[in-house]
Length: 125
Image 1 (cartoon, rainbow, N blue to C red):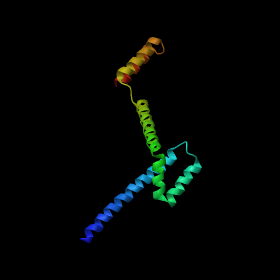
Image 2: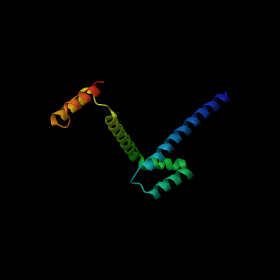
Image 3: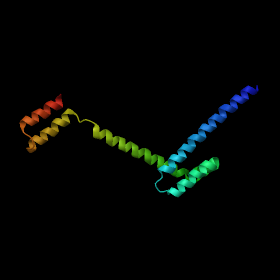
Image 4: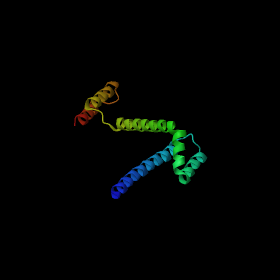
């Protein structure tokens, strides 16, 4: 029977340890993500996390918890907008859009009929 309790204790303590590590990593990432917090304050928080990890983590979440969510949300929105901009930048236009752009160039007199036919052939290829 004691083997069951030891196993349960091991599972629970392992779970709590990994939960604490996740919180610790979130705190460290948030520290370096915050542009308004000075280097000295960041160093003090890190020293606190090294020497009094549980107390410092608890205090950090209490004092700066709301800002953690805000900074994480803004970082995710920034990453999403950068990804969307990259996709729009590298996405090919449709053949119809390419032909329409070439036709606009032809109508403006920028290109001649032979160049238009070449661009149209490339768009349809």
